[in-house]
Image 1 (cartoon, one colour):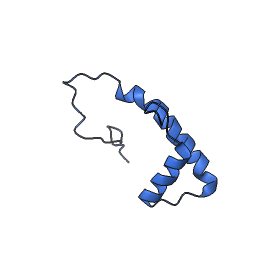
Image 2 (cartoon, helix red, strand yellow):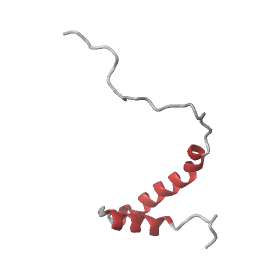
Image 3 (cartoon, one colour):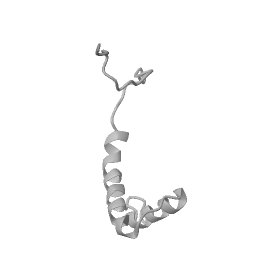
Length: 71
């Protein structure tokens, strides 16, 4: 297999499910493989996105609104 060839996503999905101990129904294996293929196609756009070296992650993520409603 050429390193630039995409993997067999159905075989990959089945292997990952087995290694991770996730029960994946045979009827759902094609859908899991489709999502792996989509992630495979999208990943380079995230990995190759340039970020400055000075960028720092946010110290705390709080999904709540910044205000507290008074009763």
